[in-house]
Image (cartoon, rainbow, N blue to C red; front, side):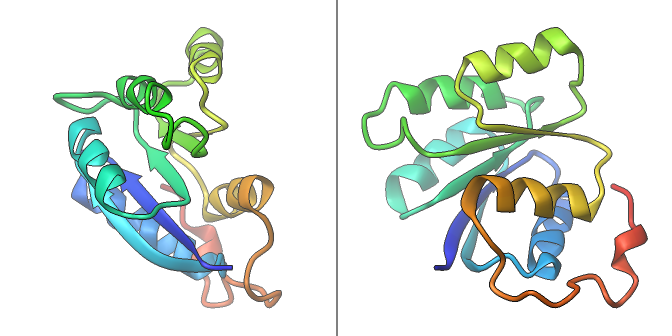
Length: 142
């Protein structure tokens, strides 16, 4: 099953990196969608069929936690899995994320393998079982 994924981050290069890593991982993606903050993400969420949201925490206009709070108020969005990818790593902050309904957390900088493992843990297996980072990308650290 191919998953439609929304990547929410105010950094265009970071969105591109996350997308590239997911593609390289072999995770079965139907389509990628992007937003630069929580408000844009809500528009996309209301217009497209999505299976998963990967969001940054620190963004202008509406941060990742505010996005999740809005999603939890919407009957159709409240059960959608959300993974927070952020530099925020204190125990208190991570506990706050989880209390608000974040299903997974990845701390920046991250490795491609960390994203792959989190996606598999939350959504299921990859579409192929070959080693996805054969071209040397496994040593990238973002």
